[in-house]
Length: 432
Ligand SMILES: [Zn+2]
Image 1 (cartoon, rainbow, N blue to C red):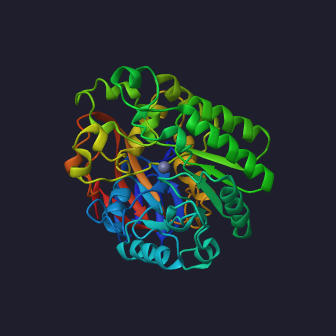
Image 2: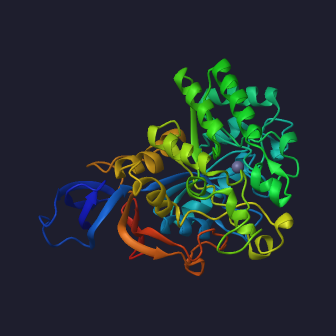
């Protein structure tokens, strides 16, 4: 197969030759001989290594009304992803080898996108007893990322033990940093707007205090810590300090925290108190957004992770206090990153490949993904047209859920095609 006329990381036009799922050759555009089994016209699109998400909620098993492994991986493919890490807060919780192997196999059967299960840190996400981390690491799913995401491992002794335990198999603990007592009943960012609206605030310190503690714990035991969905300027300062010490700390930011702010809760195109903006951690201030963008640009924050959190209509289209927290994100992530980071001059396409493919695969110790598009690399490729303008239409999503904050917004760029080991999962923007 030949993908004609694409620009790797935005460079000169080339043809990419794929043989047995691997990049066999890269030649100047137009030089490829005819006779290939299949030719895809890239029309000058940018080619990036297939995106890798460190933080996806696929909801299966247990909430198949919101998403399944199949629909979630179809959504991922449409967003340009070739691998996603599936969070453990399913029902049952992914805290045993049996559950992680089930999720892993469902991803393989679907064939749209590799699914790398995340294992729970504690049994049932209850924060009381360590789960079978070693058994999950040794299972067919080869788990390397462990997280109680949705909940914080707030017990310092348990967090220390988890950090010590994962060293045996080069694993990493991904922390959802939220001090539970400081955030009881929290509804939105604690600040001027929460005060005006009379909603219980989620203070920045509740995130920052846990991140500071965990950086110190990771350094103390010499282990790897990954910080999920960093949302405040103060968190950025703490992570910058930990990295300056040479500690093994990495961090992610979501697309929505790079673009949206808490004032949308008070006033937005879809009215006030619209739960489409209810998310955990909450949308913060413009100053936080600016700090997060700078941190992603300078590498203090290593990766963009979607925190794709599908919810059915009845859980989102309700009053603010009753609504579920979370947003879908796989199918808009690359466009939002273009808007927030590329069109602002903060990142080039090589930087996007680092933050959305290479680094997430490295942090997750995920083989076969996140490799530069070179001869011999697996043909995991996304073709992206940054000059397109797309009005976000949730009805067109492959995801089972529609809870996007971007409905009706025009975002830059469009995923044209996605290839998983040379097999097209998306062509002309549609599932293949
Ligand atoms: Zn989380």
